[in-house]
Image (cartoon, rainbow, N blue to C red; front, top):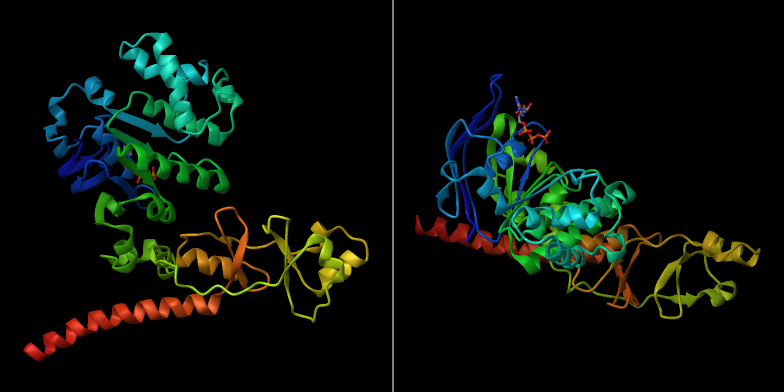
Length: 383
Ligand SMILES: Nc1ncnc2c1ncn2[C@@H]1O[C@H](COP(=O)(O)OP(=O)(O)OP(=O)(O)O)[C@@H](O)[C@H]1O
C-alpha cells in the first residue's frame, strides 16, 4: 500500500511567497493523480513535499500511513521514483548505467543491475541498441523514456513525474502519454504527475487536482467531473470554453452509424468520373486509406502529376473502441466531411458523418437530462 495523504499542508517560502495553502488531499494507492494548473500555483512545490525535497511550513504528509517527517529522507526516496522534464540524466554515463544507477546505489551488483536495466528498457519501448549510447546521442523522446526507465528500475511503489513530457514535440508527447497509460495498466504504481496542460491531465489522470492562485486546491475529482461540473469559476475557465468538446472523450461512439464509402485503388484514379464537390477515398491493396481525390485531383493525375501531389491528405481515423471526440475529429478533419472508420488492421470499414455524431451526442444527453429532470420533478411533487 502506498497511499499519500496531505493534511492541512502549507508552504511559505523564506521570501514570503505562499506556494501552497492548507492542502487536504488523499491520493489512493495505485491511482494516477495529476496536479494541474497555471504556472506558479504550487504544483511542483506540492509534489516535492512528498519526497521531502521541500519541507512544508504547516501540516502533515503521510505515505502508507506514516508521517514522512519521521522517515529518513534517503530511505523515503528509495521508494519514490522521480522523473523530471529533460529527463535529468547523468551525461557521462551510458543509457544502461543511467537506468542501473539506483539499484547499484541500493547494493545490487553492477552486472545484475545492468541485466535488469535491459528488461526495463524493454518495458518503456527502448531498443537495446541504445543501451550503450550517452544521453546526448538520443532524441528528446528517447531521453524521456530513459528517465522513466531509470525511475522504474528500482521498482518503487510511488512515481513522481514533474512535467516529464513538456519539452518534446506534440507527436512524441502523444506516444509517451500512450506508453505511460500502457505501463500504468501493467504496473499499478501510485503516480503523481504535474502538468499545466489540461488535455494531458484529462487523458492520463484517474483523478485531477486543479490548483489555483496562491496554491489553493480548487477541485479534486475525476476528469469527467472536472469537465462536466467545474467546482469554481477558476476551474471552468482553466478547463476552457471547449470543455464540452473535451467531455466528448468520455462518451462511447460504438452506436454511431457507419456508411459505405466510395473507394478506389491508385490505379483506378485516372478512370474516375466525378461531379464537382464529389470525393472518393483512395485505398491501398489492403484497403488502408491513402487520401481523398476530387475532380481537380483526378484531372491532375490525368495530366501526369503524381497521385501523392494530387490527393488531399485524409484526416484523423476512427478506430475500434474510439470515443465520440475521435469520431467527430475524424469527420471534421476529413476534406470530404466523411470520417474514415478503420478496423484493427487499418482497413477501411466505413464512413461517418459529423451531423450523425452530433445526433448521437444529443440522444445520449437527452437521456441524461431526462434522468436528471425526473429526479427534479419528484422533488417538486413531494413538497
Ligand atoms: N525556492 C523558492 N523560493 C521562493 N519562492 C519559490 C521557490 N520555489 C517556488 N517558489 C514560488 O512558489 C510559487 C509556486 O511555485 P511552484 O513551482 O510550486 O509552482 P508550479 O505550479 O509548479 O509552477 P510551474 O508550472 O511554473 O512550475 C511560485 O510563485 C514560485 O515563484
